[in-house]
Amino acid sequence: MKMAESITGVVLTAGCDEAGRGCLSGPVVAAAVILPAGYDDPGINDSKQLTPLSRHQMASRIKETALAYGIGKSEPEEIDRLNILQASITAMHRALDQLTITPGYVLVDGNRFRSYKEIPHTCIVKGDALVTSIAAASILAKHSRDLLMMELHQQYPHYGWDRNKGYPTREHIDAIAHFGKTPVHRKTFHVKGQLKLSL
Image 1 (spheres, rainbow, N blue to C red):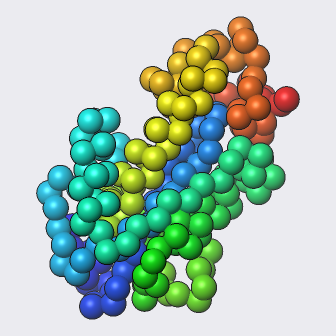
Image 2 (image 1 turned 90 degrees about the horizontal axis):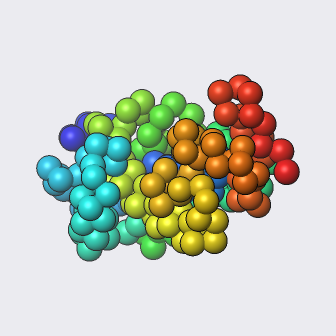
């Protein structure tokens, strides 16, 4: 994972990523991470490739190592109002707002972003597998969101969010059909084009 240096040179760079775009419930959570120049940890990888235990361990290591990191989120009602893409970008901006150091460049996972405070940026498809700072952000975003969904599971235990984290698994879909929707379900999201989550 050395792509960041080839793009930004020696400029202080923040990697950004989000978690939870494809979920039926809960917020979308984003993270921004500034790592020391040249830092590369073989344990840092796309969060989806790590076990929950590995993510937990790596999240602690990233927080200890990073020059700065921030977490931001957009709640379900904001996702419904803005759409999931704009809500995800808003969450990334909020994560960048939390940084205690202003980056000179932003690297974003995916192919869409809205310029942040006129700081130059580059979108990188599959960036969480190519750029260390984006991979680190993906781990923090996923880990933070999983913790939030575990808390929500205590309020709404019927949906299996301790296991599916709000994604449209059969268990989750069946629970919606049986128990109805909660205030933290996204009203504008469909399940396989058939089940509309309207409260």
